[in-house]
Length: 482
Image (cartoon, rainbow, N blue to C red):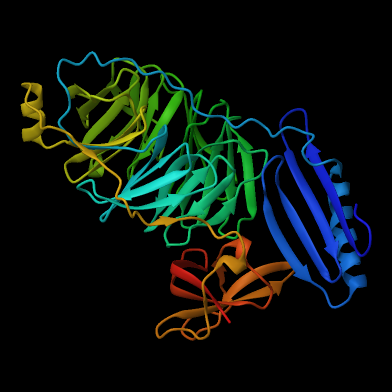
């Protein structure tokens, strides 16, 4: 507590079984109440509300503290309790036993161990443990860098929105120049992997849990699968597919129950999906294709070491795998091995195929582009490969970091032609963002950075896109309207 009209109450909830490890702080200064909350040891999120009188501000603060105390929070001293450890994936990588090396076109070294990868029509994305996300064109030219507050666990796409799941428990939207925390996963969830489908976030974690959160960052449901260390989660309209130490479990999207469970040959270390099947790479040297409808194992793809990653060509015509021994494989749909080649630079921890190229993120933190065309692979098997180009960072590389407060936004005095105005409003005790401009459904909420929301403030955005479930997503710059 501090003297005078300003006061601060700091609370923590930390349970021995690991179910919770979070803080909640309420500060009152005159008419202003500031709430800060998050994982113990992290900066957390901040929300500020101004009240008409000091008495109303103190009453609101006391109510917030009372609610948390009733939920088990207790007074504490910030900094005395250590942050919960974040699981960093520990992997071993042995030299490849393949007789030949894959035809690598270019290699970009990110400077830190990396797992996240996504490749779309325009660019390649790679995220590393230092919190860097780089975008490159398909020929290896580095376009931009996003600087996030913590290590990147994975990168996922939902339509043309790109999200990065980070060790700070937040999921950042990277679709605009200004990255922002679109979701803040509960403090007790140690993210292993995530997927987003039509704005709904699905998180798998160390404890083998599946946590589902909607586009407004509000928890929907959670359940624990039979096995721990859930490195796979994939989602579509019909189910959420959760891969863990004891196989793959499919759950109804609304949380109403388990649809099926299939024990795989070994614990699941990676997952991929196509329209009618999910693919699970396992510690027992196989990739298995499971029917989405029934969970039946339809095919098995045998590798020579534990499978760290897998992917397919469109429709699952070819199946690719990366193992713990720095090799990459290609199989036909039925499981016949077509080729095995060394990566030339560590084991592939994530991969994606696109337009006859196979993109790998390897244990040395590199994004590698392999020419997977039939002619290039045939030449490589005979010992002829191109000289891989080492990609260098541009001297004046654009770098983007999340805005931490509304004051850090660029401001405009009026909305430019074609721009869209949105407004932050207080609804049922929460700050929501609605569209002001004509031509939009004004009852829908906008997925918007919580760190820059201020009651009554208006913002200008370049574009809004409707999503299933009745909300809008931002695309382009966000500016404060003065």
